[in-house]
Image (cartoon, rainbow, N blue to C red; front, side, top):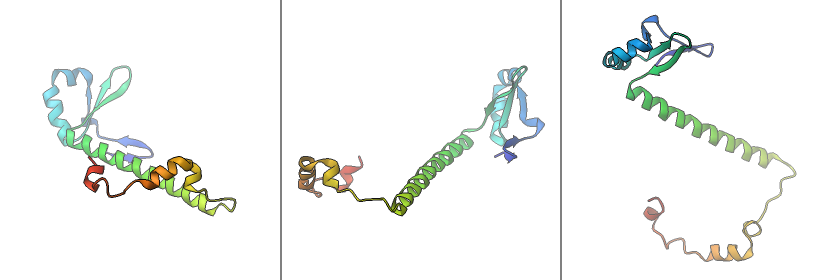
Length: 121
């Protein structure tokens, strides 16, 4: 993938094509995009579109989702650590949160009533 320097993408001049070139020679653009991303320029707006092959797009999407999850887990871990470090923290009983009736119902549920495989269908 392209290098990033100072928060900006860096790429070579041969990776830039005009929108009219992309439209007229889309097959060639697709072929070139398998080698390296192509940056499509518009006369007025500069670069407004990027063409990448599917494998590159898929790896970017997967990596982005992994990073989002990692940020979520990091945030949750930080909040837990802050809560545990808070001297004013006081535990709350689950029955108090759920209400007595719902807690009794929940405690009466047989954990083996549903097979583990059935939980993740």
